[in-house]
Image (cartoon, rainbow, N blue to C red):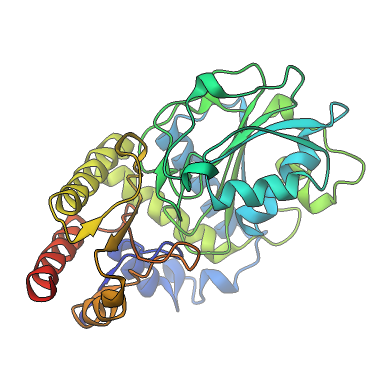
Length: 359
């Protein structure tokens, strides 16, 4: 069986070694005679997997015991509501930065529960850059500052961390585990799993413990982070198989050399693809170079009439899911951790061949 190169923005590529281990464990997990999917979440086996996943993640990210690590359901979009429900408190106001479609969704949801102050926006540049920090209109009484470090649709990424008085709350769905971060810089980090963690269905929340226990009376029990922390993420049945796969991905990253090694690989991948785009008059990337994402690379063809043909031929060449988001069009190559350097090289070779034949 030959596998194609998958550039999907999510659910995204998973490491082949992880998939092979899951395949081998599918019918008989560690000699138990059944799949992990069929085991009680209260069983020693599943509890052990969850504990291993947490400890390995703490090792990878350097997460101290000052933070609770939660494995939840509902995707990052559910956390758009959970954040204000857990953190707004009596202040009732929060600061948000608007750098793309996911920021806009978080802002819209935040406004359902309190006052949202949009401190900065790059919408006037079609989300092609990160607003300079000096232009931000910060509140003096914000309960938190929310931003999206990497926007998967527009392909812009923060390479710096804002220094503000309020706790930083970040949607790291598409950048977490791609490079080292200082967890202590943040109040809350949340992420959908389906980019760099594992399969869809699992959501990670890393919350500073002193921020727990402040949920509003209207907060549903299932969205209360303290309830989740007090019950070791098992207030109800968690997505056990997704958690098991995430644990395998964490082990894969450790074996690779950790996040510093992963960051070096990711920088090489992105640099090669951006160089190929910039070195051509046939392809273009709309993002300001200093804000270009290492994870999501959108690009356009000089003649949009060729888009459909490009996608047809790329798929035949085994390069899948390159179609850009419907809101922006063009192409998009997502270069998450499990997308190898050989995949990027194959894409570049195809792009050059297509240009020679169609320019």
